[in-house]
Length: 97
Image (cartoon, rainbow, N blue to C red; front, side):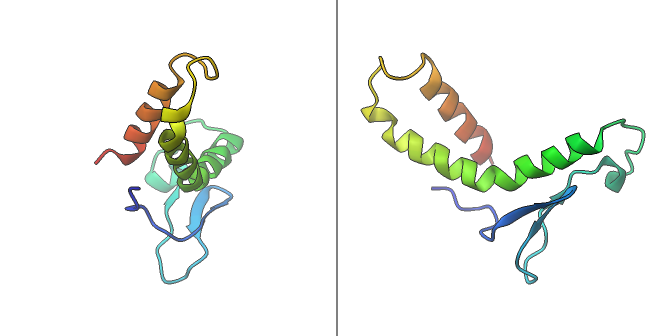
């Protein structure tokens, strides 16, 4: 498994993704104002939800990798058509260098 992302727990804190480890820098801000992009009209709910999605990324990737590993055992009749391709594409997007 590609473990090049920060290994501490990612936490959504309002519009930021922070870490519960003071010795590691926080991940990011999702607020356009922090980047001088005040002209974008994005609701606070959207900014906060972006932070939540980013904070969930390490767990989502881990689940996808586990599913990918077990996909060879799935029956073509038990899963939606194309789901394995979608799963592989999502993992590739997350791990692309």
